[in-house]
Length: 357
Figure 1 (cartoon, rainbow, N blue to C red):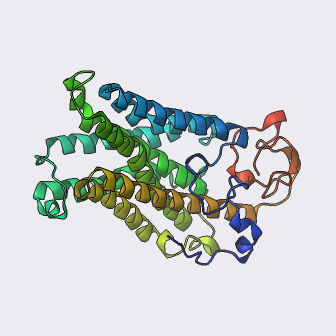
Figure 2 (cartoon, rainbow, N blue to C red):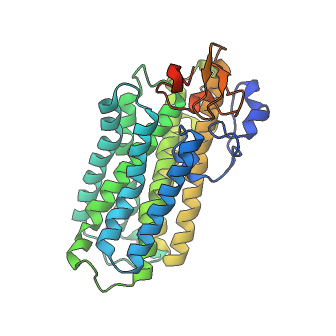
Figure 3 (cartoon, one colour):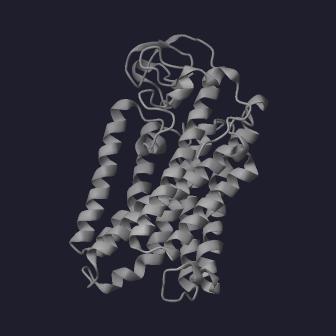
């Protein structure tokens, strides 16, 4: 879905606007899971995270196909949150306050997921039958409207608590905090809601193919949808209250605080409706499309945030780029590899220099 650039500074619309600022070898508009979910990883770590994500998905598929559903469920619920936790530690995105950031993103998101999961478990839900007519049932309306909207609100609590913190004043921080909180919430909710499955034994008599597809949907696609929506909403909040005045509309009409939260709500509700209305193959395709939309929104917010920060950077002393290892001035982009220096980890660079301005 194309997004208006709003009143972004004219210098943002040059050549670099067509290349993803966190990974200049990729286009700005592209479906790349690792460079979008983990934008501050240097190139040598990006490959490792890509392999870890692919291996995790492969493990879920293998466990599902052999019928070990309880273990496959645990792997599906923990895959993306564990990678997000490892990412936060690897890039030191929280700077010198790990308990504040990890606690208010992953932990608060997980607590919100437990709350939603417990409520969902106590709602009298009918045996699921696919079709639009099912949406008129009161208990189904709770499942496709009330619970998804509550999930968005709860996922934003942790990021909102960090919004006014002086250290976290970048749009990129808002995107990362929002996405991390969302995937933690989705993971905890999945574990709570699906935990009764473990009572069926290690290998219950079920259709292994259908179960495997469902685990991929719930463990990969739905977290990407919610993370994309909440990450976009958090970016809109950061752009409004932490960005310079001239850049507060740089994300366009959909990037204003109210519309950003509405986008997150629409994605969450759409994902819930899809799971009620469509059969297995239609549901898989529709969730994949929604996940792609969420990734593109998150990627656009990260890209614009990095370009805006680079615009305001002043040249400084020479440092070693932690992405390519070559010397460059402390400026907007590395003169050797072209990566936005703000996209690199915030911890000290190799050789004792700072890797970002």
